[in-house]
Amino acid sequence: MMKYIPRFKPSFSIWEIILALRSSLSSKNKDVLCIFADKFARYIGVRYAIPVPSARVAFMAILEALKLPQGGEVIMPSLTFHCIPSILKEFGLRPRFVDIDLNTNCIDVNKLTREINSSTVAIIPVHLYGYACNMQVIREIADRFDLKIIEDCAQACGGVYRGRRLGSFGDAAIFSFHCHKNFSLLGTGMLVTDSKDLAEKAASWVNSLNSAGPGALIRQIIYAIGLCVITYPLLWRGFMVPVLSICNYLGFDFIETLTNESCRGQKKDYRKRYLMPGVFHGFFGLCQLAKIDGINKRRIENGEALTKHLGNAIGIAFSSFAPFGENIFSSFVVRVKRKKEFRMRLFRRGIDSHGGNMFVGPLLPEMEGTGEFANALEAKGCAVHLPIYHQITSQDLLEIADAVKFALKE
Image (tube, rainbow, N blue to C red; front, side, top):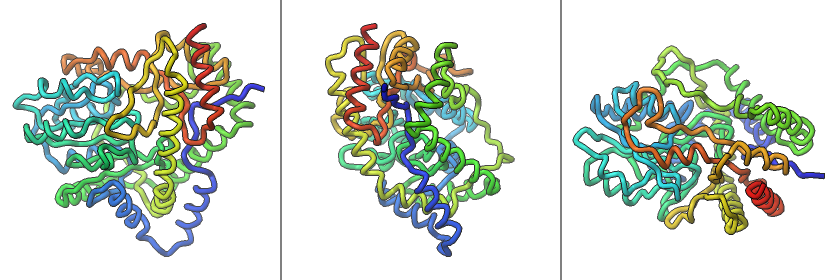
């Protein structure tokens, strides 16, 4: 019988959710979220960590605290998620896109200085897919031109560059704890910084947001449990595989249709209600923090093994070896031609994959003429995300590699 391998499995278990929920309901220690935040700050190597509803809110809080000059340009990679440049524009700032290095999918540091001008105020290095940006060069450039650095670690929690945790190199950094991340609190996020002034201003702004009721947490838990259940082997093979097969035949991806975001603005809507991190997230965070290094170690081993298995394949490209950092492989992304057909051939051999949900910055609405993007366009158009979660076995990796090689030949 063919072994069907899903594109994704949560980094947490249903049992961990139950334990955190039980602890949050029975414990008298209501400071557990603060305890988790303090431990997370020490883990990253910074002084302050502020729990937030999401990485987007963390980014907005940083901009609120920094009060960057109106009309200032912020340098960021051309391969991006749509909400970051949209948020910049909402704060009166102008994105300036720098193309990526196809060997890393991160911002090309060799092109940074030529994009800096008298209006430049900050740089946003994005450690995309778990691959560390060249923070030594970025830090040197920022110091030379007196620029702020806001690290985007949404896909790189626990990653290391030259012996330091990602998130400890800039003025502030954002983390996402979404259900799909290697470090998950079923949602929410974290803002980290070494600046007391920035931390106090950001925390004050976050605390001013409207809080959602307990129903939001219940929905979050139900969604997370659903992810655990649906990726269980028997249910995946018996339910999801037939559904995805029908959808593939009809020419669309059922999961991507449900989960991918369309390109739309991110407004500073102060009437919106946010799920604020609470006692449950504190208990759950302490549990996840205790095992994140083990999860990342396994992902690194899986990524390196899959890289080795695919080393002699023709017609495929992927990131080079990370010389100064640990690529924690939050995604294992390959580039192929005709990716839709390639993914369908993979699926027929039992390997589910994802097409990605990144955007080309200068092609977003109202972003025309804001930078170069040839490499970003290729990365978006050719990217296929292969399964790489820490639960994958050595045999699974061999089957994935074999399926990829057959799909390339067909």
